[in-house]
Length: 498
Image (cartoon, rainbow, N blue to C red; front, side):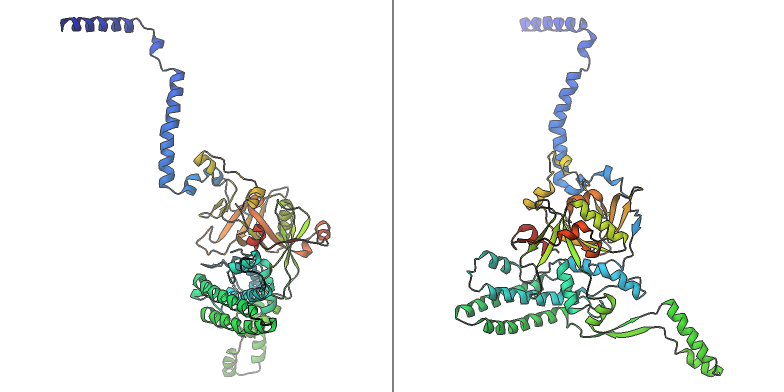
């Protein structure tokens, strides 16, 4: 014990002497130490923080790029007048809502109304009738093919879904006309179409099986079509039960303009000058205060839409396809007797050029995009980089537009309208003003600000009045189109914009 204690005393003395004789630098905080500390924090503390943050929070909230958000403003040098924000609710009718949003401002102006909405239920009713007919005609056309044929499977996939695009819309209003929302309002089923679509789809697939069995039994095309007409009667009944009966005519009432009111008052005053006081008081009641007229869907369309419509051209930006070429998508219509649709593929700068040109000419522009990407919906901002996922995860999430299309990371899944733009002094566009169809509670009271870099990356289709096109593009329209099979992923998605 004494020996052990002596050894400890000696060691303590040696250590004390060593410390006393040490230089000050030996005890200082050194650069290599700080480096080690930092690495330890990076590897442990920050990783732990990231895990805790990502597992317990919304990834979008964590990735919101505040520095870009601070640059945002909602000022526009040019803005068209809206007829009011609409709401497609739980249905896939954005293409139809956007279509009406192109024309409703002009109708509202002519009726001297600040807000006016057409009936999307009316058009959806006939869209489903036409899609059902086309589906059954396709079943007859392909009756000799096996049920697992590629085209047959594509047709069976979605016989009567809500999706569509611009030319579905124009084809329907040309054939059936239009009615205001007051003439055929929304129903529970038109606003939430899931169950309706399931039931109608089940019935149509049963019809498909029956028609194919009739063909196998040797029935003629004439006999198949006769049975098809009876089948369509069942679909029509389902639609009447869920949407209500489509009106054959309707009455619309609106207030006359101030000029009309003054003219009416003056006319009544002049007529009353020859009457005694009692008769004047009686005659004052005859002054017209409301305009009331009856229309059919077709007469309203012809008067307020100026039907038939101008020729519209679909311009696409698909980097995986050759620019300056026309592309025809086989089986791309919703109405049996109509033609399949053609798209002119151009560089993105040409789409932006014609969009700006149309807006400056007071024309609303329908477009399709991938709305799921870089969309800060809380404030209604489309801006590439507004969500910085790469920093959140320390990984590179970048992908070219061409690769996004080819590898199914992007598709045209939503339609809206351009209503304005914000330009610099030299005329270049900073951002675009967009009207959506998701109601006033989404975005900035229903509107979005699209920054120009988002247009580059995520806008895929714009619809332009042919009269806006310049000689270069007009010459391209004379070329023979390249035919595209209906299962091409991009064009398949285009027909089902929701």
